[in-house]
Structures are given as C-alpha cells and as structure tokens.
Length: 465
Ligand code: 5AD
Ligand code: SF4
Figure 1 (tube, protein in one colour):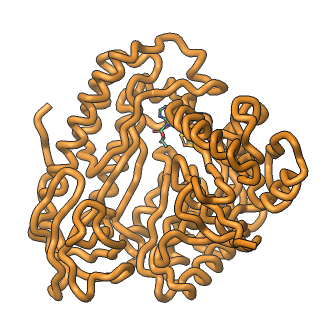
Figure 2 (spheres, protein in one colour; figure 1 turned 120 degrees about the vertical axis):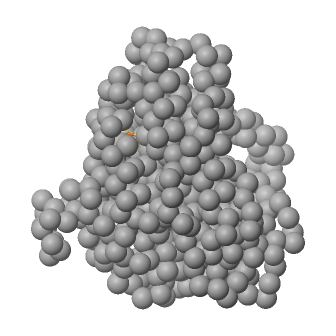
C-alpha cells in the first residue's frame, strides 16, 4: 500500500500557521506523509480564515478547484478546518458537499476520530465545538522551519472590537500557564529552535485569568506578560523572542522595560492602530484614543533603542468621514510606522459594525486606501533608508525568493535583508550584515565580521503629505 499523503493550505494569520503545524503533526502521527501539491495528495486540508470577506471568497474558489479531483477520485479526503468552518458550520458542507470533514477552531485534536467517521459516512462529517479545555499546543507539531516556532500563550479574545469576528469564532480568552509555555520553549530549543514568536489575540492581557487562580511568584508590580518575557530571557540557546499582537489599551511600561532589558526579546513592536480618529476608535470599541496611542509609540522609541514599529490600520469603517480619515493619515505620519498592514473595512455578519449607519461606497474606500498605502510605503522606505550603513544581526531564513544568487534573513527589527551567498549564510545562521542599500520593503546587505553598529539616533522620518 502506498503511504497516505496530505497537503495543507493555510489561510490568514500566524495563529492559523501555528494551528496548521499542529494539524500536520497530528496527521504525521497517524502515518501520513507530506505531499507537494493538492492534486496528488490523498488528503487535502484547508485551514481557513474568516477575518475579511476576501478570505471567504478565496476558500470557496479553491474548494471548487478540488471538486473535479474529488469526483475523479472518491478516495481523496477533503478537510476544512478553522475560523471559516466555525463561522459557516453546516452551511459550508451545503455549499461544498464534496468535502469530507468540517471542524471548527476548538477541535483539531479530534482530527483522527473525524477522519475515521468520514471513512464510513456518505455525507460530510461536521463537528464544531463551542469551546475547548485543550490548547492546540498540546498536540504534536510538524514545524515548517527548523529554527523557528510559533508558541501560543493564549487563545480567544475578551474584547469586542465592533469590526472583528475573532471573539465569535475563537471564544473568550484563556491563557496557558507560564510554566507550560516556558517548558514548551525549552523543549523547542532542545530541538534546534532559536527563535520563537509568542501568539495571542491580546498578549498584554496574558495571564489575567490565571492570576485569580495563582498570583505567581514574580514581582507584584509586573504583569504576567512581562514576567513571561523575563522568564524566556533565562532560556539558554533561545536567541530571539517576538510576540504578536499587543493591544494599545492594555500595554504597560513593564513590557517596554522587558523589551529593553531582556537581551533575546527583539526590538520589534506590532501595535495595531486601526484608526487615527477618536470618533472612529469609539465606534470600533477600541478604548484607547489617538493621543494615548502616540504616547505609547513615543515611550517605545524612548525606551527601546532602534525599535521597529509596525501596525494594522482599517480604512473605510462605517461612518468614517474625510476628516476621520485625515486623522488616520496624521497619526500614521506622527507615529512614523516602520511598516504597516492596511485593510479596507470588510463587513463580517455577526459583528456589531454590520448594523451601523454610514457604510461607505467602495470607491471612496478604495481611494482612501490608496492614499494611506502611498503614505505607509513612503514611511517604510524612509525607515529602511535609515538602516543603510548600519551593521545588524540577521538570522538567515533561506534562499531569496526573487534572486537565486542571494540568501534572505531578518534583522531583530524583522526587516527583510538579502545578502550575497557565502559559506556562512546558511538557514538558521546568525550573522552580521552591513546594510548597503534600501528599498521600501527590503534591505540589501553584505555579511561581515564587524560588530553591530546601530543607526545613529536622529529625528524620525518625515514625509510630505
Ligand atoms: N475588516 C477589515 N480589517 C479587519 N481586521 C479585522 N477585522 C477586520 C474587518 N472586518 C484587521 C484588523 C486586525 C487585523 C488582524 O485584521 O486590522 O488588527
Ligand atoms: Fe479582534 Fe479586537 Fe480581539 Fe483583536 S482585540 S482579536 S481586533 S476583537
């Protein structure tokens, strides 16, 4: 008998990438081997996203591609899991009845049972649980990159941003115990991992649910998240710690201090702005205001030398006026983001904002979107230009996707750097690179033995409107 094979396609965020690595781990434990494409794989799993409408459309498009393959080979197994499955539930099986298994955000651990049930079922097996007692972290993982691991520190979200479907799909926030996270990281380091990215919908509120059960033994004035960063600073062999995403309303100074004081915590901060208008932030139910956001940006830059700050911004939220949008441009310029993820508002049925007045004409949204991305691209270019002449630590990831003569790596600030191939520039190597030139979204550099040489502190980049 030929080995059973699988192919996983991941849509959406890093939490989904983490979950897909667990799904792959579970399948490999069952004896499946990885296939290179969905056409030849015996089992195809789509780990889905529901955050914006185009994620929905993409999934249904890709499922239609699989239909003829399934008709030609009824033995092929098609599995759909994750956020969109949780959102659409039975509807998904109705729209794509050629799928075999549909499971939600809380039951990936049940994959073996669901696949067994699908073997003897004539219709799709659909299992959507409303909550779980088990973190996916308890499942085996098949990591994509040997030196990097995603580590989830909490699941779910207790906020209710009016545009966001995540709390509906991933449930209330639940934190993992600090000792469990540290133990997982230690085991990963023993397995060759040098860089971890901590994942949670709101990492700053990490552990609030645990404090009630066990106040812990860290300093009383420190949040659990800062305590976790300090604890990970003690893990020998762990070179880099990143995290995403914090929430501006819950950000505390002890986390900035930890980013400054704990050597393996990278100088990289992803701080979602969403809108620069206080009126829109209120409608979004984001309980900070633009001045508080800018204070955090200032504090981060003052506390953590060289920190690179990225953000998420939504354009065209219902009721957004030209003045509100002007505030977003203004705050974006003042924050001088090093990079930004920008989104057009997308209606998500079930969220509060769908019912709001003032949904905008897509043409208006598109036009504002272009103005914002023009600004954020120029800010990225200015920020990258400041790196030229510096010497920075880079972690090599692999060959450049655009130029076979080069290898690509990331700085501690998470900037992409392409360097010429050298004997030392192999995946997972930690090297120094002198930055020789800069473009909007990448840097070019040369591997060097010279010690790190940071950018000369100076005024933040300013760009014309
Ligand atoms: N429309 C557009 N963008 C959204 N995001 C979340 N929900 C929506 C939506 N309905 C964006 C937010 C969030 C990022 C992960 O996705 O900016 O921070
Ligand atoms: Fe969504 Fe807001 Fe929770 Fe982030 S904090 S997952 S945007 S509800």
